Structure formats: C-alpha cells, structure tokens
Amino acid sequence: MATPVVARAGKAAFAEAALFTHRGLSGPAILQASSYWRHGEAVAIDFRPDAAPGWLVAVKRAKPRATLAAALGLPGRLAEALAERIGVGELGAATDRTLAEAERRLADWRFHPDGTEGFAKAEVTVGGIATAGLSSQTMAARQVPGLYAIGEAVDVTGWLGGYNFQWAWASGWAAGQAV
Image (cartoon, rainbow, N blue to C red; front, side, top):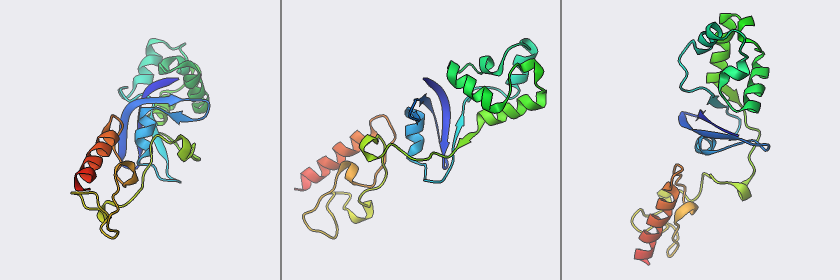
C-alpha cells in the first residue's frame, strides 16, 4: 500500500509516496531519504503533511463517532496499525489534548531502521571513489595513470528522477573524450 508522506532523514525531507510492504518500507520518499540516513539514526514520517493544526479535533467535533483509523484517510491496514499504536479509537471518547498528541505523533513518527535488503537489492547507494581523487575534466584518477572512474563507481549521489543516469552519461562522455 502506498500513501503520500513527508519522509525525513538527517536534514533532508522528501514529500513523495511511501510504500508499506510486507518486508518494510520503500517508495520514492523512503528511497530519497535513505541517501541521507545513517545507521543508528531515526527516520521521521509525517503521515498527514497537508493537515492543518487541530484537524483531529475538528473531525471529532463534526463526527464524534468516527474512529481515528477512519479519520486518518490512509490505506486501511496502515490506518488501523497507526491508530492501535497511538491508542485512540472513537474520537468522541478522546480528549482534545489526546488528539493533539496524536497529531504530533502522526506528523513526526520516528523509527530506527534495523537494516536494509543489502546491496543486491539496493536501488540507492552512497559511497564510491572520492571525487577529490579524480579530474573533473576527464574522470582520470589523479594517483593512478590510465585509470578512469565514471557513473556510480564515483561518490556522487543523485536524487530519483534520472539524475544518476545523467551523471553516468556525462561522466562517461568526459572519460570517453579523454581516452
């Protein structure tokens, strides 16, 4: 199931879709944020990025018998899991303070990833040959004559949307012109 979120890791935030799978999280928001995530750090998700402050209290006033899961407007199983973890059922039975706390949690849901699927399944990686060791004109290694590095072998990370392809083509062209 996919839903629009804002995913944050480090100082970066991405408003994209997140995909909740039986194996974990994926989708554009998570893949983008994963480039900025470091092991041991938290990732934060805003499940209702367009909601105005006080939106849950407003729903409670309009529909006091509505459940939190129904009010979330998220895919069913995700909404049910979040409502269960927050501990709110029917909105009319919750205090305004409890609903304000639920809003805060939903806007800054933090978790610590316990790992990745590994390099074999990676769609996003970081690292590679440091750009400081390469000529930006030719992609030639400064310390090893005749060695050229291009594309994802170089420590250049692009956002989703073709930036890594563009880097691969441009760095390949530069090296090809020099050889």
